[in-house]
Image (cartoon, rainbow, N blue to C red):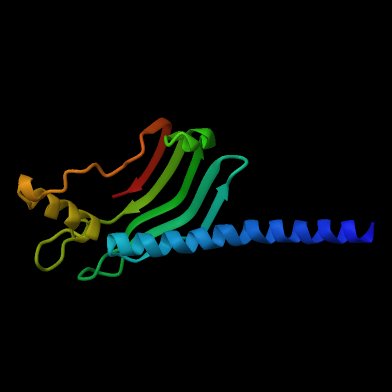
Length: 160
């Protein structure tokens, strides 16, 4: 009897700790990957992935300007809430039932060379490079993107 209670206690602690560490680990990975993909520093205050309630919550998402610009904020999103359909993911389809995005601030800025901060993001530069390649040198295989369905988008905008 004592052994069963001990095993259940340990199992509860492992599950509880794993759920907390899961969110911290995912938050760190998203921060690092977003910084590498955009070339601009990214910071996230909080992240929560709910498997049972099928939701993702991000709080305090901030992307700062890339190098060559002031250190001010490029994008400030205090709240992002997403409800998703887990069953659709198993069918290789991204079905977002409800997406709420609160945009507090978007800061567009020109540097001394007259270039906009959004044009200097790595993502924007990669798009330019693909467009400038001749048709024969472009990759012809599809990117393998998942079909997506978005039922409801609530967008609250602050300052531009």
